[in-house]
Amino acid sequence: MSLKAFHILFITASVLLSFWFGWFELSTYSDSKAAMNLWLGIGSCVAGVALVAYGIYFLKKLKNISYL
Image 1 (cartoon, one colour):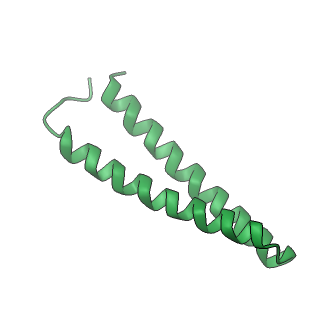
Image 2 (tube, rainbow, N blue to C red):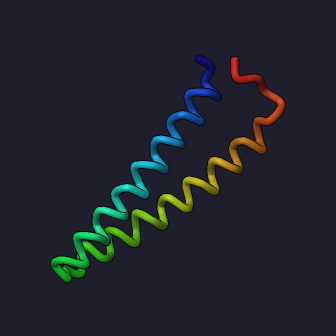
């Protein structure tokens, strides 16, 4: 597995984990109404959006390098 393929795999896993954690914290907030759960959920979703933007930037930057 090349470094490019590993990087894409790692970014994808990070995006999924970030959005899952954001969903978990926001659903916990709906039950407990604790402000920390709201801020962690929002922050995690913002980090997920930033990771998606970084993934797109990374793919555009290295489009000429193969996955092998």
